[in-house]
Length: 436
Image (cartoon, rainbow, N blue to C red; front, top):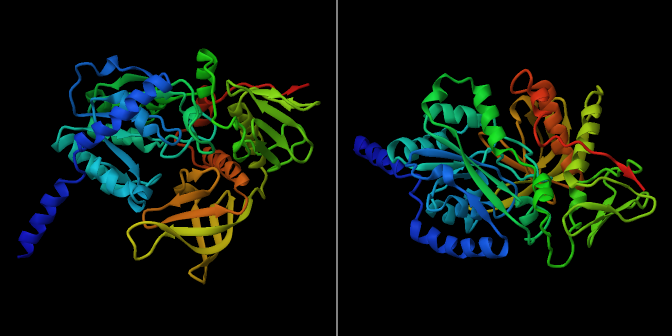
């Protein structure tokens, strides 16, 4: 009897993940294909996929909401089994929809054997296609915020052809602090690996080639196309305070405020205007300003790199603790309050969980990155449990992210010359602080 039960479980397991339900996805893509091409001017160079048959892997950059519709349109008629965050499993109606779409749910930023086995069934047993966004998180400034080193090991494991889909303009389309905005989009597919050569390649080299194939800077792209970015209520600056947290003029932190298309420091009155191409212009007089939002984060990144050299460096903020709702299939619930601290040892939450006093420590060595919605939360995923921390002052969120990246590069780099290599990427933008 037990053998029969185990056999049924194995058979059932082989059916997961489901094959993407083509009729449903086609009906969704019909709408989005027309909208993206006519309203957003989406163009796609997919010549690299011509005549290619599965199995293969597609790696693509991830920026914000609705990326999956752009990726789906760019790759059509190929319909991959996409890897998605484990948070999708606890969200309705996203969970049942993603299951029908054949999603492979993965715990972000940690090794997940379940997800790897699901990908193996797609690639090796079905001869299908797996789509992966190694960022596993939103971009805060139109450049890569994170790119999982595990993607290199994943590709080496299966030794099938690997393609990269780089999408440009997504940050203007729908980032995490704005609704959809009119802009121009572009996608390009390139072949990164044929497959067999992966066996003898160093993991570091595989990682670098994948990263460089997906590397993007939406502001550099915007300078090439100079397409207007149009917000429904002319509110391009609203929400930018969750990214640009340090004043360029007086240095005050967490005092910026976006209203309409103007970003103002409440401490000194320094104000920048966002023009119709999503670039900054001086608004106040006098004014200290940069031309691009990602240059502002580069300015902040440099300051954070200096701060972490101090022996007592830390960031802390009061927060609420949320976890997946216990006893229910969907939803997250607030279970406590406390304080979240980040220092060279990692993240530490000290407070309550279900009225009991607790301390949760997430070691820096094991915390590669954290999920984030710049306005709402930071989330730390571990193999056993996921934690969502909603800071009382979410303007501090971007500094947590920049500091985490800087601390990881200093104490736990992926490879010896990582910092030097990253300086050559398009993420690192030269900038000048203008004074007028």
